[in-house]
Figure 1 (spheres, rainbow, N blue to C red):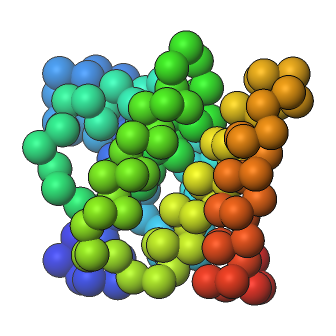
Figure 2 (tube, rainbow, N blue to C red):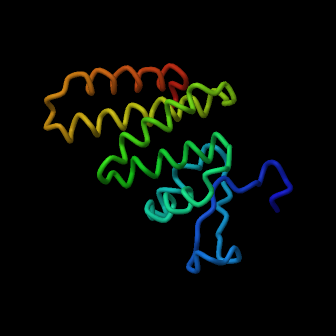
Length: 143
């Protein structure tokens, strides 16, 4: 029931036929379960393809999930794309503190991944990862 605010889907996922809207699966989760629900799918490629088809959707949570999928797929310049998405999200003042905490932690994870990919040599990536993880922890120490 997508009319109920508490049970609105937070992400759409194609089952099979990408030309048919009847094959879209709506993932229904609350904010706490978003990342766990998406991790269960582990089909980040399809998430990214779907998001590219619906670029005009202006929803901060949906946009965050695109950055999350890019970070998890981690091919070519996905991490840089995810950082650009997060930067744009941070310039909008339309998000709650819980989403800001998630964004901070994702920033930290991206910089940590970039640090690891650079054979642990780029100290700036390490420094940025620590700063963003700290911001996320300060936003919600229970994570």
